[in-house]
Length: 275
Length: 355
Image (cartoon, rainbow over all chains, first blue to last red; front, side, top):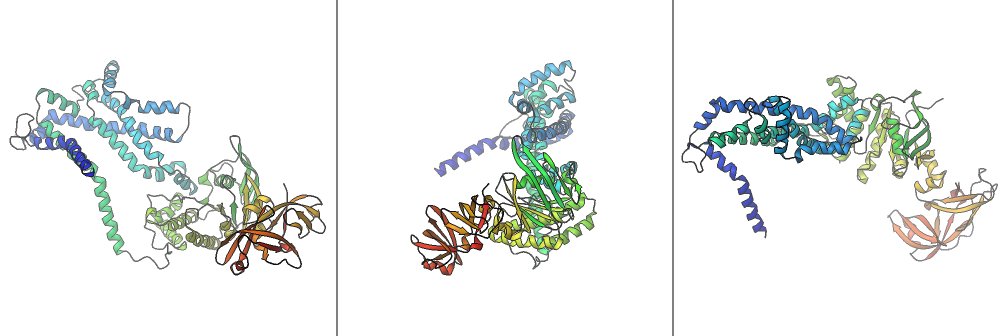
């Protein structure tokens, strides 16, 4: 039984990881279009990516739009989450549903909506239009992450801070914010990734001027199956990997630093309580 | 002369529920006062009103003659140790203790020095750079205490701070808290539902029940002369029997269980008044033979609980349960299921008015 489960697990993992295994070698391929296994290897497509403005411009667009989306999302989500998690008010459950709505509605529906609605406001084919649309899609994700964090936050800590002489504002800055920092960072990261990743809405409204990387990749694979796509996929994979591993690396490094410090420290005083 | 901390006519409503009903209390400077009561009795609510986290529906509170109304919690200069300690997880022990000084504009160098001295006072020398999660429960407790004291608060509030500790550590911390409190001379209110904790630590105990103060007294007074049946039952073990006064001037009462009982005459009672008769278990003496003089009754022994140095004998007289505390050496004279005699001296009998 146990063996069977392991075998099934192995197959599933292989199946999930397969795209990665295929994409990485394809980025080094010298074939003229996407082909697996690659007939030979070279770095030509990396050079092509880093020298071709028609790839670099969408990359820049994507970074810009994702950054702006993250900022706008957090400006909206942080106060909204505090209000929805901590306070009772009339229409709260409706507000809660509204926050999550963009996640429930299919992206294609949202995209069509934005296309016609933003068209009238002359926001189609502009950075601002894409940022607004992406923020709308990022809000529910960022909200879910942050509200989970905030629900687990022990409010006695805030009371303690106030009893120690901190005004509500200083309590927020010195206690609430630092303790929620990991939650805020993850929430922002999710907002960034969702925007960077988003394709459907971008295809509809980003146009030529605000063209994002996923849109450009989609166009490219439809027209010519340019292996540069594999290069970009590999680069994105590496970036995400670094992002995911950083916290662990930092933690491990800190642990080692503390150990060295503790080693050089004087032994605890004899006065120390025996507990 | 007016007291240091004064509560007068404090009422608190939560919707229709009256959490506090006309609480009046005076506490002197430097006193260690315990709020004792079951959960929901209003002791924590009173504490939170003093701290400023709850608003009294009615009534006023003054510290050193200055009213607290309208002052926010952070303007009150009151130190609090919370039940779960509420240490800031992202700060080290010394940074936690420095925090109230930082909020008062004390410079980092001077503040950290002062925080370290306070940690030393609570016995945590050498632990200042640790984060809360690297400290044991007792150590976290000490950090919380240091943090609540370092800014020289006008009042120290302790909200069931020992609840999460095991028995040995709890006793150790009781002594420790008392020592530090005496040394700094800070006026302290300690909230607990544990009556032994209240007895061992307090200058005075305030017993709460159902949002009202039942009695304010020093521990021995509270134990030996409880004002109400609730206090008698809540503080220490007790035998409480319903009866009535026969002769108020001579000090004679009667109850169905023990028959007639003499008690120290008290002119607050009148002939025929319904009363409760209280005799503490350790004031009852067990013997096999009937005593030749004095007052006594018979009892059937049901259970004997041995603690080594002493034993609790649980039995019944008629159909009323009786508890007797005997010294460990004396327990050999009786066995479960047997009948025996119990006797007591009139001074041990305390009469409580039926309310």
